[in-house]
Length: 421
Image 1 (cartoon, helix red, strand yellow):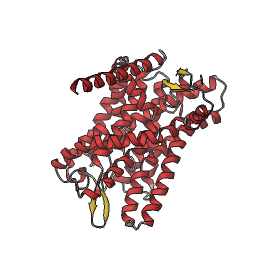
Image 2 (cartoon, rainbow, N blue to C red; image 1 turned 90 degrees about the vertical axis):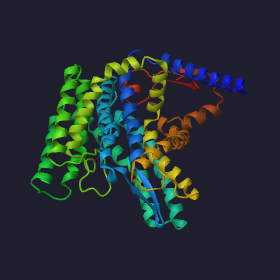
Image 3 (cartoon, rainbow, N blue to C red; image 1 turned 30 degrees about the vertical axis):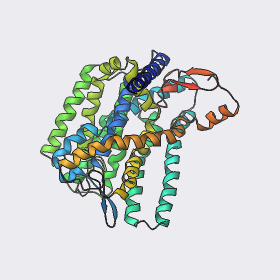
Image 4 (tube, one colour; image 1 turned 90 degrees about the horizontal axis):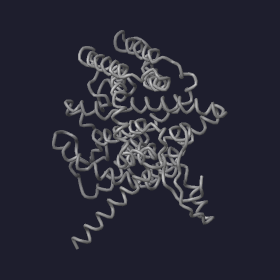
């Protein structure tokens, strides 16, 4: 039996290495693998961060959200590591402006370009909305407490705010192609001075920072495309200035140290974005730019590149369904009682230690969601069925050529079965 198990393990490792080498060989030499690595790190950072700081506490009247940051503010540095949205917008701005230029060179209209980009976002969103419409109806019909239903639906759909902002910035790409990042940064600065310094303006004024705040890293991505951030000096300037400004804002201006929202807190750095969140994002963007060369070298190895390629092929699916995976795990385990780190209040270091043990379970459930819904993002569900119906079984290696083809959709080369594309 040990020999059989050892042979099976070796066979699995060999298959993984073989598959990784095929993905590596199918990747065009012109592809900047550092871009894909940064995007994968940004998505996985958000996912892990949410799983660590989002707790669904079971009470007699249902489930309620809580955060360990509320009871343990010394955990704020965790949010500095896992709040990586600025890096995603940096990469998004770089890829969008690059693909728009490529599309124009190939004679495509703005409408065709925008439809191609937004369609990839819309398909997985529609799948999420349809499933949660069914789940919500089922919960209400079976008498689930209204507060619990509200908590679950709000948590499940919370990733959509990010996609709405990202879609809006994508649509505005031709207008912001040459916009200097200091302009949206100035908007955020003035809004925060009015809100927190002078206590003036209407209550909704802070929401002007929602597009302006994320426009800062997005325009940095456009500057990257123009070649204005190619030097290491640019990365160091962003890292140093962003870190210094954030430290001053948190230490002397009273901004929260946590770079994510904390239930019950008077001010959130993300809802809407504050000046501290934006300056922190500048530091993250600077660090990302400084790491480009190291990431390119690391991605020359087949196994790390294959892992990054897999995440990029389903980045939106992973992002959209990670909260559902957390809630599905929590709900499925309720019959077993109040399990530590899952249903209990995050009130001490012991909860953090146990929550870490739940992360592989969340990842396993997310893998199931990924298997069920990734075809909506890749747009291959219907085409794959059509190919099977026609009996087309030739083996091909599909290689996306050109910036607009692969980076525009976040796609990577892949091995598939079907007709030659």
